[in-house]
Image: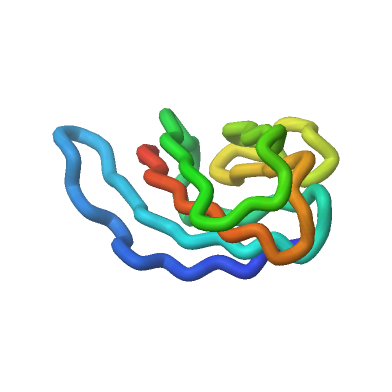
Length: 90
């Protein structure tokens, strides 16, 4: 399933790449969202509210955890968890 995303900051220039700041609300244990980048270079994430502490984040992957450049996948979350992401890419 696709997670609900809110782009709080989009395409902030950071050197020769760009950064998005995204709030993501989980609607299932596993899911993914498109960043708009061709490739995700780096991710920093933190929970706002998460009932599970053991969620995992994958760069350039879809919800099946197979390669999908420009996407971010989350596994092990709970419905309603809210996560913040700083995503760097190009």
